[in-house]
Length: 70
Image (cartoon, rainbow, N blue to C red; front, side):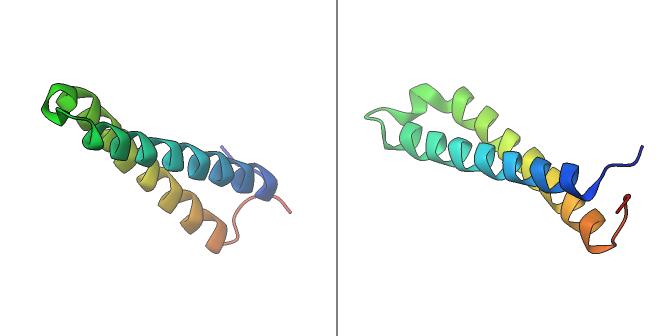
């Protein structure tokens, strides 16, 4: 499937926004009085961060190669 340059740029903006929110969530949960209590939520957020970072890198690679319609 092909995506326009605009689609790829918008996807990256949305991923960036979501990454920021997830990273802030992890910081907040780790700063709680008993962060061990939130271990599963922290793990889930960290896994999502990795997945979004991967997606962002793939989109960046796609954009750098100049693929997609003009």
